Amino acid sequence: MVLKVDCNHARALLRASTCCLQLQELEKAQRYIEFVVLSPASSAADLKEAAAQKVTLVRAFIERDKVAANDAFRKDDFNTALELYTSALEHLEVINLPDSKKVQVGLFSNRAAAHMMLGSPLLAAEDCCAALKLEPLHFKAQIRLARCLLQLGHFEEAKQEAFDVINHKFSNTDQKSDAKQVLNDLEVTQHIVDEVAYQLRELEESNDQEDDGGRDKKCVEDVLQSLKIASQLSPQSSFIATLKAEALRFAGDLDAAEKLVEDVSVKDIRRLCIRARIYFELADIGNCLESLAPLMPALESMNGNGAGSPKFEDDLINPTELLILSQRAHDINQLKERGKTAFSAGDYADAMRMYSEALGMCKYSKTLQALFLSNICACEQATERYVDALASASAACALAPTYAKAHSRLAAIYTELDMVSNAKATYEALLTMSLSSDERTKVLSYLKTVEERLQAGTPINWRRLLGVGAKPSSDELKKCYRQLALSHHPDKASRGGASQALSDARADVSSRLFKLIGEAYNVLNDSTALIKWENARVKAKNKAFTSSDSPSRRSPFNDSNKWYSGTW
Image (cartoon, rainbow, N blue to C red; front, side):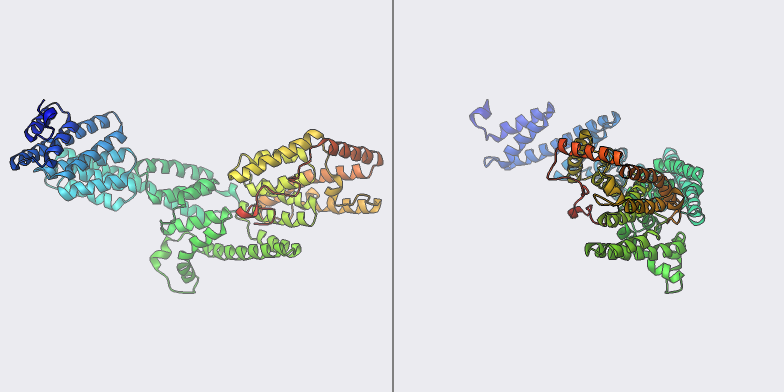
């Protein structure tokens, strides 16, 4: 009633805030206290009582948030617990309570536990350090810190914190037992890491990279299983992530391996070694050379060309092979750029020579082989050597089934040759791969056009396939057929590949192409079959919907994103 008459009546405001505090209506109490502090009518006694009530209010806020946070933690609602512990700590910043330090220590320790449950050991470690700075003998926070350091992969620091608790005269039996458990987990993790690191080094130094079957797959499976256990105890260890990437590379899962080592801020020597190898095998020569750059002084030192750190050299895995890899990556990169320049200038023969030379240096990377086969295909397509282009693009897709650039090239050739059912299947396969929104839109557009041609019954353009004109002579037709049949005979096509995998891919492709060449010759060399084929093409042309944006000579990838109808 008094406040309705005089809303600035200090005594009434103070009594109202007291009632609200008793009723746990803390936000209302806060507003009344603020009114008293801001009111010009408040006396010194009023302000003193308001200050005392503010201390009580802050305690009430802290206690309410702490109790609610503890309850949320028990219910596994760690996000809510984290917010409430943070809120309580923020209230402590408003006013200095007599026991602020003790309250802060408890809140920091509890918030650290919430961070740990949410998988944020670094933030948890920071809270533990804040608690220990206020109370150095808070053993609960120190044990928690040791656990955080273990999860982060800082094994020596974790061991030291656990030992400090175990050896301290004031720590009790339960605390010593908890610290010993951290040590036990640390020893298990360290043993796994040391054993796996040794096994992977042995694999790297003893296995032939070209032959996947020659690798000890059982050993790799065991390594990955061991690392799974280690990751549960030390989930954010960068070294364990490096070892896992190394094992995944041996298992052939390069994309997953690359994701584990893509953080360039980690400059661990072993990680740089594995990054270089992974990026080379993924055809990312730029990142491969970037990863090798910090290693070059030691590599050159070991090769007798400079002075390096012995410890640094000890961390290198198979340094001789790394030095060879560095030179190979450098040479491949130069050939690639020279080939691209020649292609842009229309010198397809020189571009093809550069790409073929680079291809011969890529036996350790199926993706690199696929890239240069795709570029060779572009040269062959530009010079209207369609069977050769089909062979190169098909081999590229066989080597790297998820390499979108190779599939885009193959789809474009199929479309140009009116092999519409093959084109449709290849465009559909492209849609399952990683594409930008613009690339996906183009693929869908080209797929629609191909489907229209397929529905119209468009037959294969046999003349374009064999590389003959509209009315070739019998001798000219026979000559083209024999040349192509000889070049793509299964017994010959599989010879001299850059790798066994490429030879196998070419052998598989050549058997299909050989039949296709024969079918083309049989149609074009038989007057009855030729007339029937020409009539079918005319009928299909009249029936099909022709688009001004025909995909006949296009790849779905344009120059702006470097997935274009030229070379990469």
